[in-house]
Amino acid sequence: MGLTGLAIFRLLPKTNCGECGVPTCMAFAMNLASGKATLSDCPHVSDAAKEALESATAPPIKLVKAGTGDNVLEMGDEQVLFRHDKTFYHPTGIFIEVADTDDVAAKVAEIDALKFERVGQTYVVDGVAIKGSAADSFKKAVEAAAAKTNKVLLLMSEDPAAMEAAAAVVADRKPILYAANADNCEKMVEIAKKINAPLVVKGKNLEDLVALVEKVVGLGYKELILDSGERETSKVLADLTQIRRQAIKKRFRPFGYPAIAFTTEEDPYLEALQAQVYVSKFASVVVMKHTDLASLLTLFSWRNNIYTDPQKPIAVQPGVYAIGAVTPDSPVYITTNFSLTYYTVATEVEATRLPSYLIAFDTDGLSVMTAWAGGKFIGETIGPWLKDSDINQKVNHKKLIIPGGVAAIKGKIEELSGWEVIVGPREASGIGSFAKLRLGA
Ligand code: SF4
Image (cartoon, rainbow, N blue to C red; front, top):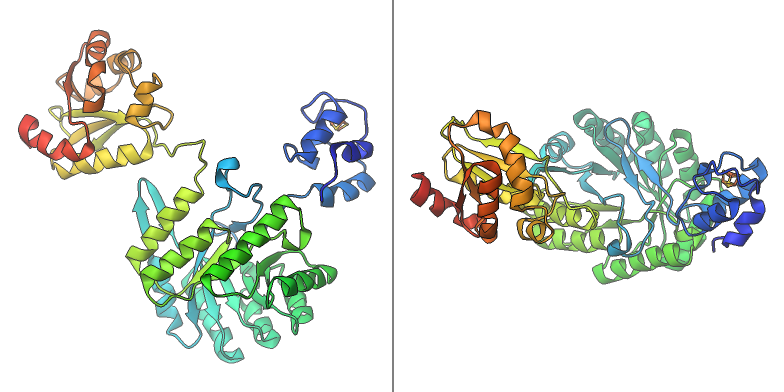
């Protein structure tokens, strides 16, 4: 359990200097106790107090990092049990497994090439998990994988000798080591410590996992990821939930680390569905087997939704976008800068094959009807903007196509901008026939 505000206050300097951003040490202590401040905000805490406070005020789930350079995967450091309570911070890392008996170079190249674009976002697989069957082939497989990809590597062998040899090959890549168990944990901790790599601790069940984590922490290592050892979907879900709940609600330290899960389904779509369960609750890493594009895309889209801050809509940069080889005669559409709306409209405009301008109007990422209701997509905001916009220099006409759902703003835009407003279709799906009928597309 964490300390109360009063207990924290007793350890603070009590000078009320205000350098932490609040006027008194008591206010700071209360913020620290409720997770609204971090200990480093106070520059005057004594070393002794720091030691006492650090473990008590540490985040409920430790931040653990794997990989280096541009390919660092951050896991854990989540603050809440439910996304709508605040937000989730570190999206689940998706890894694809390669066995050392596979054609490692070819499969890793295939994984490395997996890339998806959706609503302006690029999705890629985060890492490659290399599963060892024998020391020699494991080391060679790790060498081959490391030569083919810069993604985060996860080394899978419970044989400490095999792990030591393979880990040495990629010591500078900060791989995840899988796994420490009751029989090998002393040696595995030694290897992980040597290269400062995250170590997965694998129990036979939750009780066993607690004992093992306490043993590993007792050996002086805390860069940990948890595996309850369970593989059946409903039981994995129950374990992941229990781990997260105990860590967040009870501050139960042995569960205060990110967790890993492995898919078992053979069908790619069922595998993606299984992975979505683990992404939803509460795996920081999911290791999969298939590289099927379509099923992975559903998984990435799901992950993106779960890890989007619910209070911050995904938005595109406001501005004027050219779709196709535009000319001064090109039509001009307007929509909002809510990412999903923008890309839906842009896709439909592109499909008309009539080069066009599309204005993504700044509504702080709200959709058309929400922005209209909130006074952010109305004649009074669009009209003056349009009058001064550089779209006036790009086209030889002054005709603006607005979404049909906000036809009521036509008059005000015309009054304040001097442009003629054409009311377009209510839905983006109607743009094709609208362009054919009204624009000769
Ligand atoms: S910076 Fe430290 S000493 Fe100063 S008011 Fe804040 S908690 Fe107190």
